[in-house]
Amino acid sequence: MSGTSMRLRLWAVAIAVIALALGAGAGIASSGSSQGEKVTRLRFLLTETFDVISDVAPKGPSKGDLVVLHGQLLDPKTKKVVGYEGGHCTNVDSVELRGVCEVVFTPGATRSVAQSPQITAQAFVDNVQGEGAQLSAVTGGTGKYSGARGQIIAKPGPSGSDPTEVTFELR
Image (cartoon, rainbow, N blue to C red):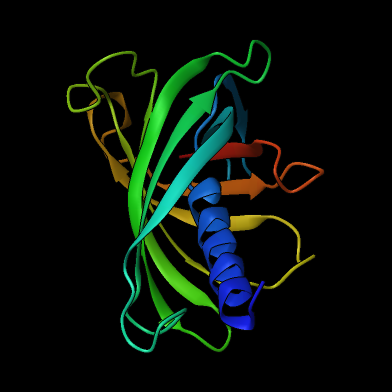
């Protein structure tokens, strides 16, 4: 594999990790935070695909490249599809392979995602390996998630290609 192909692949993986960090979950738990506010946790597994749709010159990872993401939220116990993810990431630093992503999740969507409650998220991601979980900001939502705030924590599976464990912490 050429150096450019490898860098593009690494960048795409980094962007995929961002999207994974923006996933949602089938398990639900509530607890209090240190400030006494209620926290609702949604847990899922996330599988996703991504496509580079705009490769700005020079060829390979460069500022302005655009990646489109599409994923499925899986129930952690049954591995059945319980929602969807869609979004895009823009490369902002080709040396460090950093990107900014905006993603929408529809936990519980079985048919129409446009009519399902949605959670929106945004993240800044880079290609640093071994740094632990990816954190993303919950920026809002619709329906039962209207006004949602909090964070999303994504932990890649043990082999890197396994589904990502995703936990939404909503306030």
